[in-house]
Image 1 (cartoon, rainbow, N blue to C red):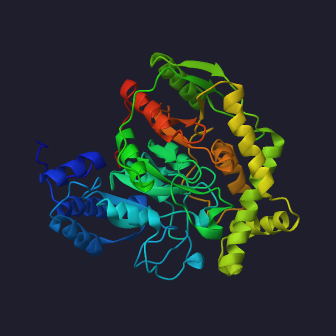
Image 2 (image 1 turned 180 degrees about the vertical axis):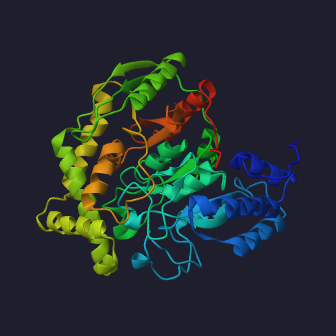
Image 3 (image 1 turned 60 degrees about the vertical axis):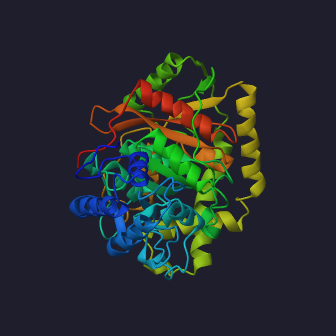
Length: 455
């Protein structure tokens, strides 16, 4: 039997759901415990745009009233949803009062699936304006990293990452267009999974950045990542199979020219490579064919995706942050001149998939970040050049795999000398999500990480 506890804060989603299904806990008590913790921690973290206190309790009571909880894999589990994903009864903020849309009449499909699995949405989490940059900051203040409050929680799913790392929810949904799940996962010491293209319904319209965006999960354990991914993908909860001997490519090369990888992140990759060998796998050096052409495609797509969203939504440009306005202006140039084309993205996808075949590798290991997470403040009102230098300088490793539409996961592997988490990224060919999770599970067993930050 699950031990009775005075609070369910800090328990995993898997533990909570099992306890609720067995009657060792009620969804109402679990949600109330987490809402209390949110009230304590939120003033310092600023992770949530809205907390659904009363509504969440009512929904938890409805879960408790169900006669059969056996088929609810997330029974009573509090979850957070990123603020650019529709939640019925709430506006969709998109990181900005200027971009806020009307109250949603129905949930996005991923939210519907979470609720259908028994999860309770306790709130929507903050992101930077339009999700453009990788530091969650705004006029209401920055979202702070629970490991070090003067540092960013990353972006654009920064609020989701901060909420999970601080134990305000055991799992959170995020979405990832150029690293926006994996970057905050690395900043906050979490497991962050970006599924491959088409595995989880996305449907963010023109805000999907030409199909680059995928919905993903942020968790503190691999088991929770497997559980949440299964729900979002509309599958029965998966059981991971111990992988047979794999051949894993290792690369330190940055996709962005001029980016310098610092010593701790270099060491993180070395640690992960040793763990792979210790688990019985082979590692080889394998350099992805990044090149200047890919960098230009990534930049043009990033700019034009912002421009297209601003135009499509009819936003008042004067109400947007100066850096976002400039980013959109560059995007108009890129779009008008035909620098953003589907065949370019398709070409990189083909080269990326062929890379795994040519090197005869099953997975690729890379750094997750190049440097320590930057300061929490000074981004939303900062110059465009400041934001670009910050983003490209500390988080260049995620973008290529969105353009390729390949699955990727970030896994913690230790702590930096400055006390912030260290992480690595694993990338796989199409349909390798469960393999990535299985290898992440081997890391977790061989090199356990601290699950929660102490706020």
